[in-house]
View 1 (cartoon, rainbow, N blue to C red):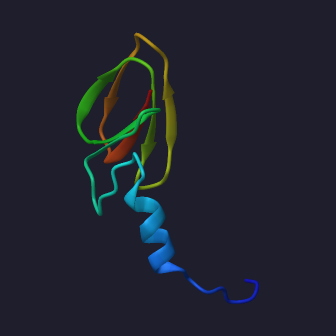
View 2: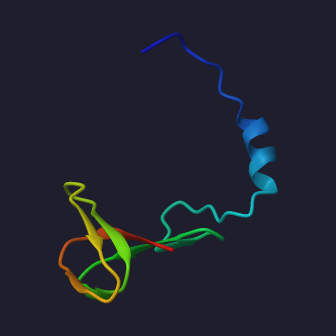
Length: 79
């Protein structure tokens, strides 16, 4: 647990203001210059990526060229 720490909300907002990242409450897709995250459900994915199920955090690495069918709500991480 540790000792309580002060939260610097205004300093955090100032840092994020010039950030190249997109910030949203419930995005369906999140893109940066390095990677993308997409929320997926009931679709086929082809190519390289990492799928994480939101229900139980089951993780699948999808090799390039392989087709993977998503049946559970989850997140797909890809470059």
